Image (tube, rainbow, N blue to C red):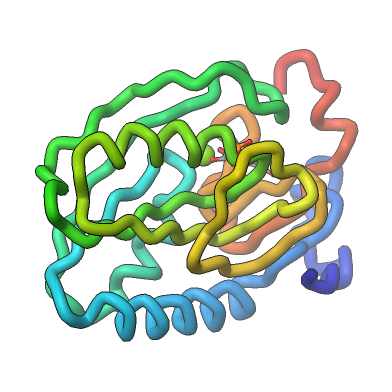
Length: 194
Ligand code: 5GP
Ligand code: MG
């Protein structure tokens, strides 16, 4: 578990929207580099295919892969649990994989592992394409919320059961551009049109 940073670090303009900074830009940067080093060691022998889930992985992915100095191909799967709220709902695939992953070593990247429903659905889809192996990498893991039997091989941070935004993660498509990860103010969950 990570310790909560002082709430004073929340920019003034966001003080009614986010409760506190959970992970600072520097903390994230250091951890992402460590993950990249680990992945580089594990994937060094064969060309890898990185498959990232849209849209929450944008920042994490960009920072991660620039520190993996291996030949790789990159593609995306679009998946959204539609609805603007903070609860996972029914899954909708919005973009299919274009690259052929048959016989390939795949690194599957997502922003956060929560109940595990998204990851288990995506894993089932990917496995049908017969890759040689699939390793899962997530920036955040809310272990306490897991209902599915999925596990990530590479985890940036284990976090408590709170709704977080920033560094690619959204609430109703907002806050993705924050360079840090913050806990959403509980009052925001109840907002009729956030
Ligand atoms: P799961 O299917 O594992 O329950 O949920 C995974 C998806 O739900 C993530 O890819 C993410 O889009 C969303 N999600 C789960 N927890 C959070 C959170 O704390 N903040 C944000 N922004 N999204 C979350
Ligand atoms: Mg997501």
